[in-house]
Length: 135
Image (cartoon, rainbow, N blue to C red; front, side, top):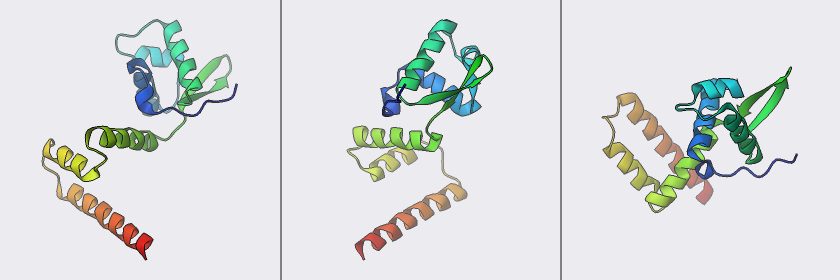
């Protein structure tokens, strides 16, 4: 069956997101293992159905190990996170990363020196990349 184009993570239902989160934590899992970890879990049959839907949407894939299907996420967690964050920035902050960063920094605990230095390196890298494109 040909895989559909991957939909955005925000197009997932709550249960689908929970399943994908379990797979990111575990790396790989069977339907039974996923079922055990779901809060207020639906039936096992429902979990298997949701896994089929997630495969059709292009978020997970499976390998056969004997009679079991072992599921795993298709996209790296960082790519999925970046996609979700880009959607949030576009939706709630008018596409402005600086407004999103200001909101995030204003609502969290104080940053450590290490976190401040890492953010500074990211900003310097973005400036250098922009200069390189303008040259």
